[in-house]
Length: 513
Image (cartoon, rainbow, N blue to C red):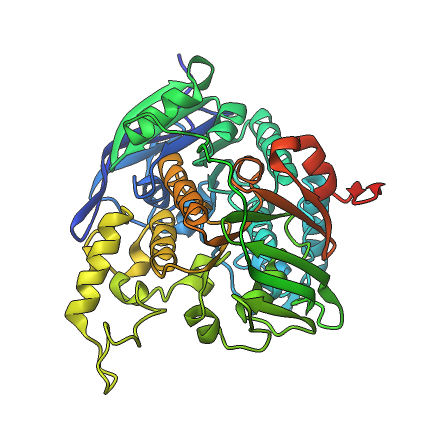
């Protein structure tokens, strides 16, 4: 008799207003396998996994575990069945520490007093074993996106789950961290755990998964064995057409300086007595893409905060189009020609409980096109403008411009921000991980948009953790390590190995560190 599947989702249908997110989908996961779930933004992947984790209840279909029908009413039921989930958008309490978030719901008490010693030891041991490197006493609100992601992963490992759902777990990890996570997944699968792995990164799926199920617009396209397929075939299944994985760009000579950063220092958000950015200087010129590369936590976040006005400078100056903006407000920088695609789209890019149309005019609602002299919003103009951006940038939402932004998929939230920031026609675009969580079709589109900005004579400052993106999109690479620029590289003459050496601090401008 064949061994039963670890998990079966049979004929699952989940509907939301004006959209069928999952349309009669069946999924079969074997014990000890890594099963990838692939699809465009909004294809229904996260919704399907949310059904398995008990966050949503399906209108139709059933779930089986180890050959038996089960009812999963909420995440507590899922955890009781040994099902854990690392969410794409973190489920963390911002004012709690890393440790408190990990043990939340599984606290140990003695005589009514919370006991953390054993939990701390287990978390530190897991952190060391899997190379996750978290500070258990750090407040989540002070943590980088990368550390928050690692906290989510530790939450699941701490609970010793058998069925592990990873929803875009590598979106904010560095190449080295991604490889470590891939090895963690292999080890967990070898221990008999079953892993469901949502990812848009074809190279990761090809390297770690055993099988892959592809979704498109809420329907199941098919399931394939990874050893029998290719990246090109998977991308065709996902998008329904051939995709350019690397966008060609013409050589061109950069023009005048648009962004001039001189001797800038910015305080660390976690340790205010120290500087996260230390005496950094660089320029971005007309018609070029400059990329800041580095392992997460080496000052890139604080540098962007300083450039965009989210944090004050401790030292140095910033000029935009020849005008000193060192002490300018965020709006003055925006009106003066700067656009910003933020690292954390939900925290800094969107008001989640606003409809999509209002989010698309967040930077421009005060302009005469969108409001009267008395400050009243021109709702029909906002709706018309939003509809144009939704169509132009293929932002998929169940109720169009009126869709509550919180209800949209992460990838479509990202596309909405990109649409808003690019449509301002900025002189300088600061794009921080602009393709985070996007499918290959959307990545192709965003890269084309960045290159078109450059070709139009604008300047682009790209901050990325993606090695392929760092080596293919920019004209120049600046590597940050420990808050300093340690190298300026030509992507056409640089290998991934050399770049990784600089990023890890093993090499600097003078040679081997």
